[in-house]
Image (tube, rainbow, N blue to C red):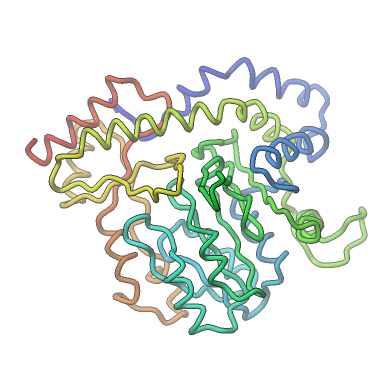
Length: 373
């Protein structure tokens, strides 16, 4: 493929020596679960995200599950979230015994808006929590969403795609994770800060929530072989923590390179009928985990890009309310028209930091050629 959607080997080549130097002491010491490397990464992520607490866990999916349990979501409890996101968000609600309740997206940013959330919460006054997803690398308007919620409804920020993203709130730049009740990160390898395997983290300013997440991630106990609640085996292993700590100092530069690539595409497609470039809320600074356009004749464009050797992906081709596993919720086609329209129009193009100028030109040339420009 001339231009892959993501090239992790290119990134690894630039940091190989740093990563090996970080993981070899752990291999030699044979201490792989939790311990000092995890504690060090937790402290660094807390500092980076301007939060008081950071608790590592086994995956981004587990991070959502742990956050839900920590805020008290249990059997039969309703949780309001978006149908246009990765499956894990609503899947975790189901797996703690909760009931996903969907709200449609803002058509510009693809995120939940205060209006969509407040409308649904008004209809479901017994909702136990709201999960706002920071989709494609830009934060949802968590400040105004939180202000629209009843005081007893916690706001969970699913920031799996947005570590390091910022939002201007009350005149000050605020990091993903800083203002929500509790926030979840994913370290899946394709993320802007990705491990060499799976991993996740929960961050919060709340002491009690942090303590509960720590208890839940180790089978529900704070002392070995004593269990106050039934929890999970969801621990971040030391090797992944060491890899992530080695990569973290590069994250700002990588995100800046993604923004530069996105700006290049924005300019290159500005006059192109048939393509709508990503809309970034003026209050936001995106980290562009994906560069996602709306495209006319999207499916034909995919075939064209494939023939030209250009990587792409559709995030996400079927909204969650139409997934077979959620048929029991009773939703039907047409219930969330903006989510359904987005699913039929979006396609993501390569935006990773190591893209060369020549590769960017190939992407632009291929897209413009498809639309006859």
